[in-house]
Every structure is written in C-alpha cells, then in structure tokens.
Image (tube, rainbow, N blue to C red; front, side, top):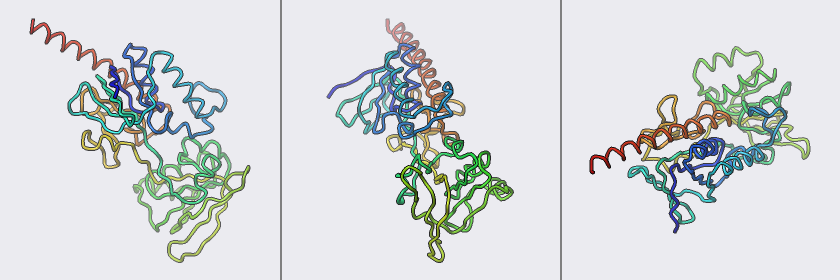
Length: 324
C-alpha cells in the first residue's frame, strides 16, 4: 500500500474536478485527482458539444476532457488511475480516502466532484441511439433538433421543464407519460398546458427506440398502460427526463444529503458542513447540470480550499507560538 499526500484531494475528473485541479495547482497546492470509473465524466460519452464557451465550431466531448486533463497535468496536477471505495471525513484534516488499488490518499482539503448520472429507461435501442436521436439533456442537445419533431419522456419537473425548453427550437413537442397525471409542480403544468407547441400522450410507456444505421432514431414503439395496445410514434429526437442519480453513496452518513441524494452546500458556495470538505459540479447541483457551471463551481472549490488552508496555517502558527 502506498500513501499519497496532498494539500487538495479531488475525487472525480469531470469538468468540476479538473477545473478545481487547474486552480489548485496554479496556487501551489499540488492537487491529486482520483479519476474514478469514468475518467472525464459524462462529457466522455457526449459527442457534439456546442455550448462550451471559447469554441466557435462544434467540438467533441472526449476531446474537451482530454484537453482539460492535459492542462491540469501541465500546471502540476497528479492524476491517479484509481477508484475511491471509502472515505473518512470525521477525523480530518487530513481527510483519508481508500482506493480500489489498496492505496490511500490523504488530503488537507477534499473536493468532491463525483458527478451525477442521468437515469435511463433501460429499454431496447436506448443506448444504441444515444447521441443519435436519444438524449438525457434538452439544454445540452435541444439546439441540434431545430424545427424537428421531438418527444420528452417523463412526468416530473425535469420532464416538463425540458418540454418547455424545447419549444425554443421545435413547434412539435410531445410529452409521453406512463400515468394519467403529471407529478410536476402546478405552475409548470399550467405553463405546459398553455403552450400550443406541446401535446401530451397519457398512459404510454416506451418499449423500444427504433431507427436505422446511419440515419439515427426514426420512431418509438409505445405501449398503452391500460389496454396493453402497442403503437408506433414517429420522432427525430427523444429526451429521457426521469431524473438524475448523484454519485454520493460514499458520503451518506458523513455529509447531509437532500431528499434527492445531492450533497448539501452553503448557499452560493461549494462548502459542505465539514470545514475543508467541498462539493462541486453535478454532485451538488440538481438545477443546471452543465459543463460550464460544473467548471465554475470547481474553480470556487479550489479558491475556497486555498483560503481554508490559509486559516489552518495561521491556527498552527498560533498554536506553535503558544507552546514555545
């Protein structure tokens, strides 16, 4: 077993974690990033990225994350190919994390950037047409469906918000819900029903995403939840909006989580209730969930970590002076 020590330990290597690493490294904190099961985060499975600032033309998600990692390493970040299996937040600092490799990571500060994953239906064709007509983020991908016929699958706030957003790009949006009523807040339902661009298919489940090689998604196979009757629904874009699952299992019982499982932070900051422990990106953000907002909170986490280390050093100096 090897023990790796750093002034800032970062768990997660998406836009939030790598942005935190860039700022921390430039501040001389010699950060360590433990990359996890999906190095680069969700952008590594995203093809076209058109809304990240600084790029006139469409870029590829994996390329963007490779560049972020290269920048983080260039300024002094240590990247570790490991997955954290347990953390001890109660006895720090330093905070101790154990990796699947058997190694330990000790950080005077800890930045949690483990992200969140969209929930999927798990039906046939869903992954085959991911990025080829099937998406879990209208804000990310809606622009690519300008003037096309699209559907949103779900019945909660996320689904209704996605449907309303898509009316900026399409005049033909259909919300498909497996029940006969929505779970979304009334104000959102009122906005949806007032829109002449949105229609609702009640009591329907998606059984299969169908399409053609080279052409992408062409239609859905639906099933009526009351009669069992199957039908075909033609569409060029389908947005699965049944929620997200933040990767917070490691921190349950050590940090407060909200009812949806996201880490709770002080309003407007990445600070958790434990001094020196910060959360950034999708693991604490259930509202925006964008690469650029994740990167912004990663920057905030590094700046706050630097300030925290400064107060630690002052306290240690005062203690040393009192003992002299």
